[in-house]
Amino acid sequence: MSGKYDDIIDLPHPTSKKHPRMSRQNRAAQFSPFAALTGYDAAIQETERNTEKKRILSEDAIAEINENLQLIQEKKNEHPYVHITYFEKDIKKDGGKYQTIICQYKHIDERKNILITIDGNEIPIEDISSIYLYEID
Image 1 (cartoon, rainbow, N blue to C red):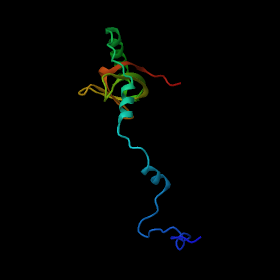
Image 2 (cartoon, rainbow, N blue to C red):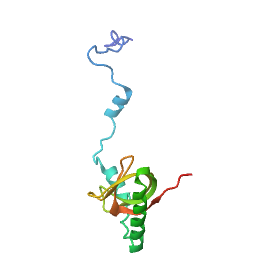
Image 3 (spheres, one colour):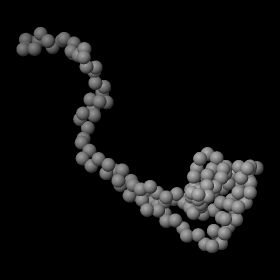
Image 4 (tube, rainbow, N blue to C red):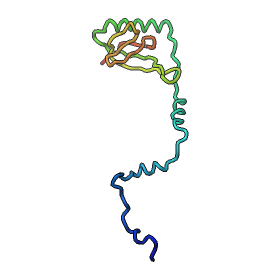
């Protein structure tokens, strides 16, 4: 059989000296479908994410928090461990979520009205829903 391309049919595939060979993954990406709705999946996930409203504390709960803060302040030089539940505002949506942490107390910045922990957490006093000394066994 003699054909038009018989002289080149068995030659090796040419490779460029200037451009490296493209990986299979990059070659496949050229033929992947176009995503016309970029960010749509992220927007749907954000809509599905739940937040809750900040609870309004009773006078008794506020008094208990203030009393426990006073006890913690008295032991501030010992940097006691405290158990804190506080409301963390969501940066994208209305509301937020309640976080509970056990950490070492550092001090209260009365000018900013925040509680600061040894590891650098800054918790606004008005967002605390419960706080007490944590006894380590």
